[in-house]
Image (tube, rainbow, N blue to C red):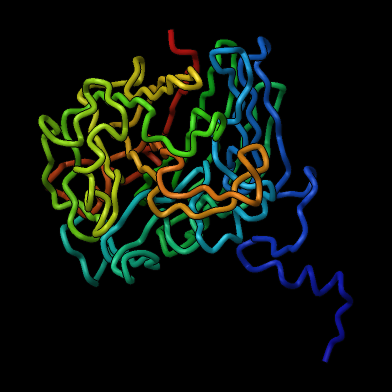
Length: 384
């Protein structure tokens, strides 16, 4: 029997996924919780990131009075990104396949209900009593340790190599570049290449509260939301697409004209699951919004507004019904929690579970000949 020193023992308990198990708050230099701070030259925006999940941990923008507020949720101890059992996925890059997958199963070529046989793949399930794979499996990209490969005062690029993790085929190499610029702009671009055919759908799971829990405001129900989409993906009781769409006109899903998130709140019961009140749904954009705003969110209280453009065809909006996490100090600290409706996650992405929905004709299979690219720009300003 080999006797281990305490240092050796701590090294041993670093699990096979490269995730740290630690009881103390890591230093800013401790990979994968090493903090990279980006500042726009004009001082309009400051963002902080860590290597685990290429995750945004702080985002400081100015309110209508010129005061900077941190408008994203998170942890004071970034190691909780790897260890929190509630796993809210705070502001990370999500993959290899974001959102939901029916029965953790898909085929190449895609088919409606694959079970077994050549070209059928099984990914570990982690949601809806084992009937769904959510956000890439048991250990998705948000809990993988990315590596900084380039950075400057305004930009950082992270690299991740997914070597058939979670049962997906082939190796995917991804680069995520976060950049801040004058005028309150945050841009994120993710480029990925695959060694063989594989599904890829990525997102950035950013939780926003534009009041930053100041002035006695603890939820986002009075935030105003506008989405350039006329249809929402219809879901079954496991939040898996039925293959149909819902026309938003005359429904609580209609944000084509700007509305307070809570304007039709009593009508949102069960929209995000049985007993759940609020939203956890995907809108399909009516137009290409890569060069114009697809989604806008603002608070009249703080005066902060964000306009989002993306090369993705859809946006998932989740009003954090299941949230139950200790707040960062800047948001009130350990005596308070991020609770239900404390933030809205706005996730730019592809069609949910298109790899299980061939009737849509949406191709989410990538290969050496077909690289993947995800891009979104967040433009912060103040309400006039």
